Image (cartoon, rainbow, N blue to C red):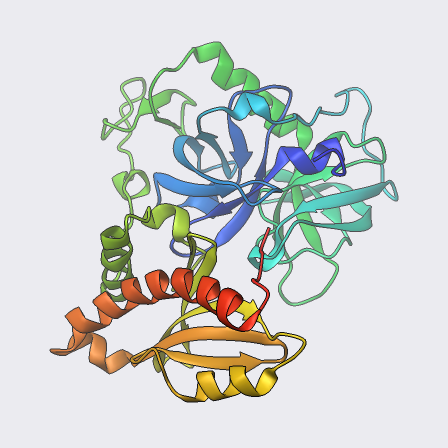
Length: 357
């Protein structure tokens, strides 16, 4: 664990049923900070650290105007915190910065660039403009200086051009944190866009200024039929669906030592797949003969490069037919079979197991 610099241990992947983003811990503040738009439509999300540990978090505070949200989770005190750059130490044009996060839901990455504009005003709000390479999934991640100190939070990129990204300045984030701490809030809340009063998620209007609240922002988005179908199967396995979500129509989870991935291919087929073993260094003919014997119907054993896979495929139309219950059972059974098969191939044919971090 000591191989990772402190700031890598402070940054997290945030995952919902629609997308993924990034988040971070700042100045020992007991919440994960991210963009509101990363978690929009969800009150419960999955968080993953640099070591691939997953845990649930609640969206505890939202400011839709500044695009900031705070996530509450257990045991955040075991993680390192980033520290904010001194407010008097202004970030300057051409200062070198780094963007930290999980672009496209991929593993942790760092991109470098310079500050192109340190006070870009867009619709009345100031942003830091940078030429660092930013992508979907970087949103909510920290922007740091050469000392590893926070200077901003990545919020978006200009879609019509590369190397034009934007970050919320550190001063706005620190102000939001200090405001929240000053209120000593014990329940989920949203900041009123008109009077900046904190409103409980149980209320439909601001008790301070009387303005109506858009309650749709305070509700969990309903899952579509397909997502509900998959997550019912996961529940049958005892898997927490929220922790298995990898974005839109993608899930992954461990069954024993096997990593199971569920996804849609070409909008036609549902796949459940697990990479379970490597091919052995000898006696390949015995392995090929076994794999070709189709021993685990309705599942398929296959080889890609040097790895052995077990998979299940169903046409999307079958999910909405009389076959739906069998498909759900097969998804659950594939996970169980994958966990058994990697042991069998190891002991029977000396196929090394695939160990994933």
